[in-house]
Length: 93
Picture 1 (tube, rainbow, N blue to C red):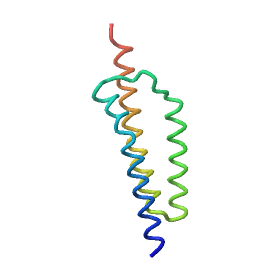
Picture 2 (spheres, helix red, strand yellow; picture 1 turned 45 degrees about the vertical axis):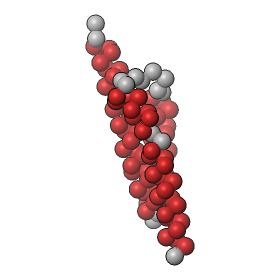
Picture 3 (tube, helix red, strand yellow; picture 1 turned 135 degrees about the vertical axis):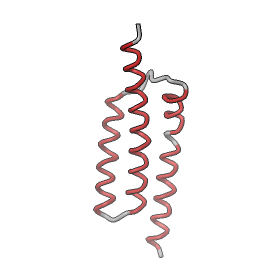
């Protein structure tokens, strides 16, 4: 029973972590602004999340696996958006 509550706390924490990225996604995809976004920082965060995902698999934590998969997807959306905007700027006259 305790493990169920622990996983529930992890799922809530993961959901909040994903929601925290919504303003960044909005900034990149809706406002089409990417100034101040460091691709190096995002790369390091992505590697860290990937390692947490592996750790989650190893300890068999559903919450950790789910949260990291969705957070990686959200970060990937930001990175794709930034790359798209920067390529557009490079090809614009």
